[in-house]
Image (cartoon, rainbow, N blue to C red; front, side, top):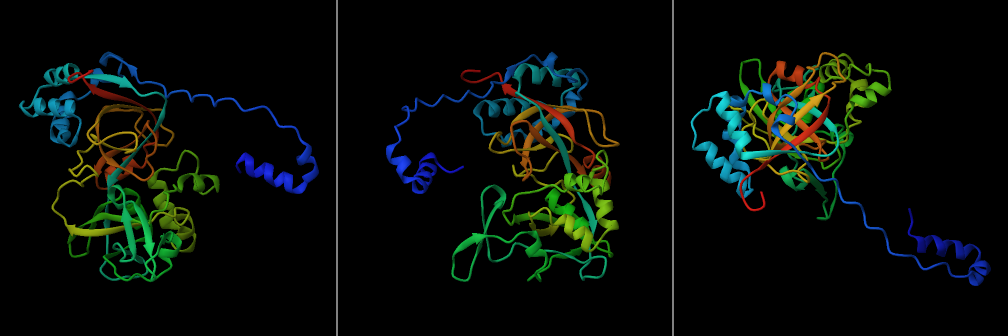
Length: 371
């Protein structure tokens, strides 16, 4: 909306006489102070749904292996305590968390989704099936921000401007190609951010996130549902990928290009280790989440309570201790998490069915000033 002064000026230009004789209006009063954001709710561990049935020993091992990424001094102190201990049995592990943390419920509800590290076939040369090039970061792309996710294009005159969207990139010939993939599988690799590709001779190569074109991520599940391409309760990743494969070519390309965001990659030998998140450490299966970095910090510990799935075949609940170790282009807001579920097809099938109502409980250290 245009500023009030501009609107008044435009009106006066059209009816000058009326504006010249108009009486001044009342002096505007002070603007009301915005209401503060609701504070987290203090809880007891007994208030956490599913806390009693958690695998506390497994949660402790995952926490101990990842807690060093936290920059908070109190979290660092608790991490040192954890790493000074040997493996704990379930009772000891539960006591460790209850003695060192207190839970806070974050206000409101959000969405829990999941992601995984896919494994796909690839070719060194294109054919009718493997027709999508895996592109490295282009020389004219200037990226910044966490993980190089903000991008601009440097023109021949040196000036910076928006980088082209997915359609423009895919309809231009690549300067370099790292591998050739099925188009729908490359699309899913870009959504997940990294994975492994295998060649007919058995060679395995890691394909790792390098940069994006800086465009906002747009999911294709809802447009496919709205166009009647998929049923409302069948927009899982598995269902989407199958539809794209069945309609490979112009139809599938048109749907995938509804998402203007494009991901560029780099490659590395497959060392068999789990993928590394934005925190710089391998992601523990089922114990790491991607969060909005403007709302949460790497290394924060959460109890997630994901219920009421909307997709067919989904597990009914996801209740567990997790650590913020990654970020994602579609992960926005204080109560929003993307749960890492591991590598391969089985993890992919499960991850594609996760869309649950989420409540998040932050575990706050009991030690340190003001704790």
